[in-house]
Amino acid sequence: MTASLKSHSHGQTMVLTISNPEHRNALGPDIYAAGVEALNVAENSPDVRSVVITGEGSHFCAGGNLQRLLANRQQPPEVQAQSIEGLHNWIETIHVFPKPVIAAVEGSCAGAGFSLALACDMVVAAHNSVFVMAYSNVGLSPDGGASWSLMRALPRATALQLLMCGDRIDATRLHALGVITAVCEPQDALLAALALAERLNARAPNAMASIKELANDAVDASLHTQLASERDHFVRNLHHANAGEGITAFLDKRPAVYR
Image (cartoon, rainbow, N blue to C red):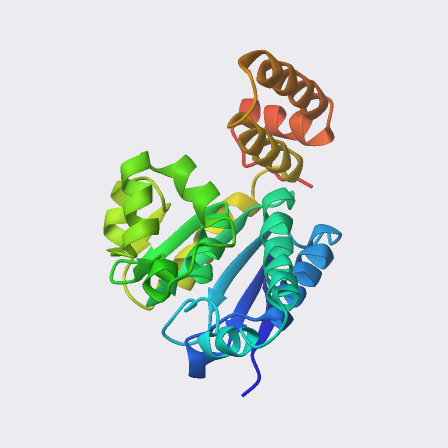
């Protein structure tokens, strides 16, 4: 069976499903390219307000295909570099995508699959799902932004334990550490992620885009720069039609309908 990235709509949410169940949804260049293309389509569609990424079957994603990586050792280094660039293009596209992206995780979430989940804005995972930065277990270092994400999300010692030791960690522990958003019952991750997406879909899309951009920039910005950016976003959003709707709806004690 050929690995692919399936797409379907659930209301105002685009659901992207990594489909390679024979190999626990291992990733590859075709999936990276399809992921970028899907997000470009979603960004330009007013009918899409959020994206959920999940895996087909009982696992989210086992990371890279080790057979393909072994074969790439016989190729010039540029071959693997190009493949990683494809993954990184997808990761960066998720990062700057102006709509919420949620990972729905069941079962195994390993290597680049873990990196992919971390790249999403929120992660909903079954409580028995298992996460592992598996790179060092096979003599490799991380890709997909894993080091960037974990060093910002966790204390240095904890992040390095995951990256260097390749220790498995369950969703409940990651939730307690603040790395993932919510845990749920097994087989309910997609439903829980879609419910979260529906909450976000009901909010003003322009405000969601501003919050994501501000959050992304806040890690490296000075207070002065961040305050200026918050001012500019606030003023722009205040003069958007959605603010008029939101404020009026609040004062009228009715649900707001944002466009």
